[in-house]
Amino acid sequence: MTSMNRYHQWLCNSRMWARAVEKDLLPWALEDVPLGADTLEIGPGYGATTRVLTRWTGGGRLSVLEVDEGPAERLRAEYGDRVDVVHGDGCAMPLPDGRFDAVLCFTMLHHVPSPRQQDQLFAEAFRVLRPGGVFAGCDGLAGWGFRLIHLRDTYVPVPPRTLPDRLRAAGFPTTDVSLRKDNFRFRAVRP
Image (cartoon, rainbow, N blue to C red; front, side, top):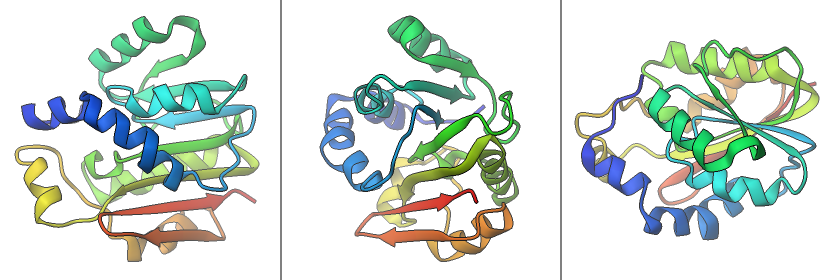
């Protein structure tokens, strides 16, 4: 289970965050990323990214994997059978090998409690992707502002310079990591 302080919970559930996700974060993170017919989102939390993805997957199948039971139940209530909501851990996904065309995660990697568990999540993303499938997403860059939002939270930022090697170790031979002011995005393709 991840830990989030009250301010962070409020922020992730706010209209301000939902607008930022729709207008800026997801268009940048998913620029030129093909979603395919079967997409998995890891760690949707309160669902701001899921709301956008339900429109962007256009008729394709969207599944979400949420580690915290409360948010998973809220997502089930909100989406019914339009989104397959799975309660489970991204480090040990209760999902079959080679099922998805795309596996995505947005601003959640820093909530995975250790680098070792982050690496397990990368390996699991590789496992559930079909050959040719893409693993993509984004996260925040470590800094004082990002740290302040996460006081008394689980907070293990991913250094973007280490990500290509870590993704290669998970099985992805080619990776792309891009930086901007406060975020990085990544994409990797399963051969």
